[in-house]
Length: 176
Image 1 (cartoon, rainbow, N blue to C red):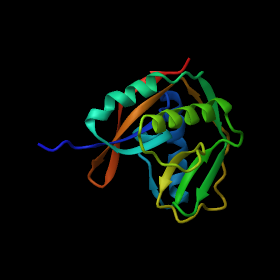
Image 2 (cartoon, one colour):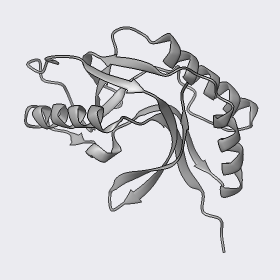
Image 3 (cartoon, helix red, strand yellow):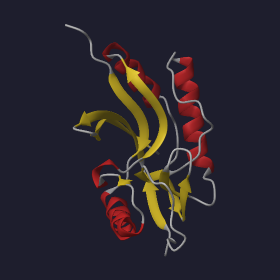
């Protein structure tokens, strides 16, 4: 029997309170911007996208994640943006988070050292709210920032469910 690879990425996974606020924000935006909106249960902030990973490499990924030493932090997501080329609507912080940047940098360095491939674009903190968005109407403005306390990070598996992906947290690690 063939070994089916796992489609994986590391991410920040919101606590229920942040997920609820983000879900309400998306619901308020949906009538104003035609797009394919993210399922509320799939809301996350990607740290490193790995793509297909063989089952025998999962233990190595867990070791890499376990070796990460980072403090917990709070994100203030205060800008709503439309990125034209990937056609996404996303929520971003106007101020960078040195702790988040270091977490993403440390993780990708360890992945590289472990022989993993990952998306190698420069890291830019963002939370995708919608895909296939041709534009962001000018009247859409964020009324207030969304605060998100990050106390851990996760390894997520993307599973195709009809035509939309479903994300399942495979494993999690705390931030100090």
